[in-house]
Length: 113
Image (tube, rainbow, N blue to C red; front, side):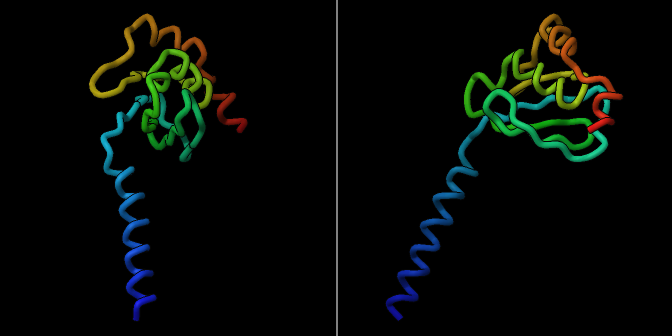
């Protein structure tokens, strides 16, 4: 009986430690895509894992580097032109977004993957 109680307490502690990270206030970087991706896509940019589906890519921002023009360029290289790139209501300025999209993969490049 004591072993079951200890096991349950351990399981609860482990669950709460993982849940604590999930409930922590994390900034989410969002890239709105000019053209939706054909299938779910996952890649690393700016130290974060971006998950793309439809016309959006999202990632939890582990650092300020995740919300940067350089990260936007990596996203564009992976999924094509970006309509907007932002975090918490703040978006890249038009000139930075234009520079980001200069790195965008063309539709034919993406189809060849």
